[in-house]
Length: 157
Image 1 (cartoon, rainbow, N blue to C red):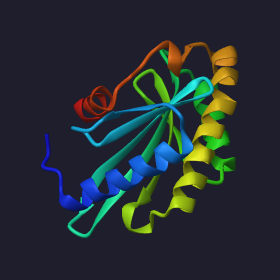
Image 2 (spheres, helix red, strand yellow; image 1 turned 180 degrees about the horizontal axis):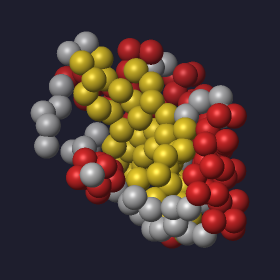
Image 3 (cartoon, one colour; image 1 turned 30 degrees about the vertical axis):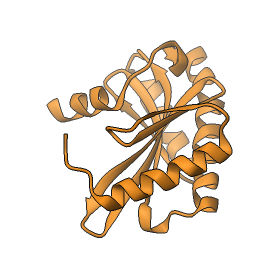
Image 4 (tube, rainbow, N blue to C red; image 1 turned 30 degrees about the horizontal axis):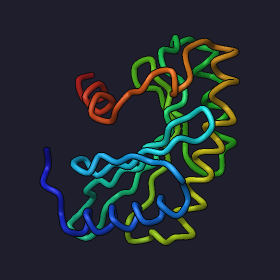
């Protein structure tokens, strides 16, 4: 595991305070600086990653659809949806679909975080069941896919 900077820890604690305000129930992985909240039929991971000596990236990842077959109609539809979305994007990692948005820790405020996580949550919750119905797979709550596993799969290819 990479060393955690004081600034990463500070942003993580700020996010934790914001999440406690906004969500009744959440859980945390203090070691990897990730917080998890459930929203509708999706699970949202909020993580803090090193970006530079002066900043960090706050990433919000909604677990949308797991075990989906990668077929051209799905890929085309995701590109069309991504083009229309005001923030964030869908991404396929292996056979798992995520919706994510990133922001710099230096631009983090209570309001900017609330607006961003609301958009991520609503977008994921709006599309996950539609995608499962049309293209197959399972919603996030049916299968959990942690950050470490997701990142390892990206880097091995």
